[in-house]
Image 1 (tube, rainbow, N blue to C red):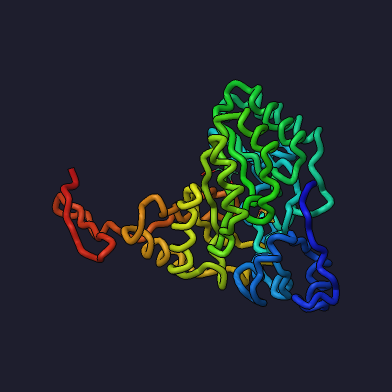
Image 2 (image 1 turned 30 degrees about the vertical axis):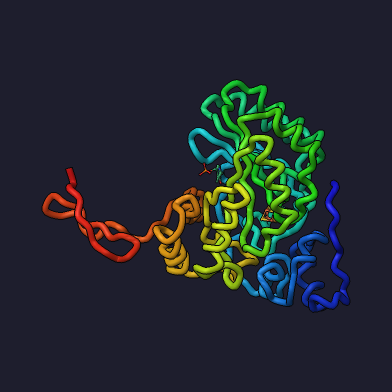
Length: 335
Ligand SMILES: *Cc1c(COP(=O)(O)O)cnc(C)c1O
Ligand code: SF4
């Protein structure tokens, strides 16, 4: 792995030694040198996403909030939706985000082997209904170029796989990983999409901009999936700036997730109303391109469910009464 990470010292000036010791005995702690460099002060948005907190241990939540184990026919596949599957390529990440949904898995000793991948390819081969494969993890870009190329070319050999997507936080936490060599491998596997994971405008730097540029320049459409995190991005101004800045670096906002009910991360949860207010603060007020879909990934394997502020006020007497972004009402015939 080409990632340069910093091991936090027990006497690290930037986090409490006792806190670090307690938390890291339960959940792995890792931060890249680059991402740590973005911290301006204790408890800022970058800090909160990357530094362990004692709150992770005082917590009620569930270890597998999305019921993924239930929808997992073989070790590296989650097959929940009719025509697409998630390929769990690795448990490694460049950094362990404190709010991670797969907190139960990432950085643990239960690694994914080549045999597991092969089993995954076989499963997808047999299931001709799968036309879209999301290569996920962990972070797939922690794999070597060779291993990543191996996965992509094996998926590409399967005729019914129309599109491949990669989910990665690497442009955000370790933008140096986006090398020319990596891009030359990725571009051999089109149509290939990448969804990345920016949560805060301070993550958009010269380095992450350059990483996204390189990917976009080899024809990869880029999307972004953010998580709504208390104290990080749970206000309209921050989210609006983030979405606008993403479009500037050619990344299309795709989803904002309400927090999953993850054990060890409930201090990041916000109210549903906070999410609705953010969408309300974006829609109509800025480019439609900048407005992602707010979703709740429903507990126990319900999948992603879209959440929208109410725009239909009533459906009566043959007309629908609609509310616009300025809170003005308009009617439109029902049929
Ligand atoms: C999110 C997810 C997908 C992809 O969902 P889209 O809404 O198509 O982006 C596929 N499989 C699983 C298990 C997922 O969690
Ligand atoms: S990079 Fe993604 S999978 Fe890895 S810890 Fe962060 S959120 Fe979780």
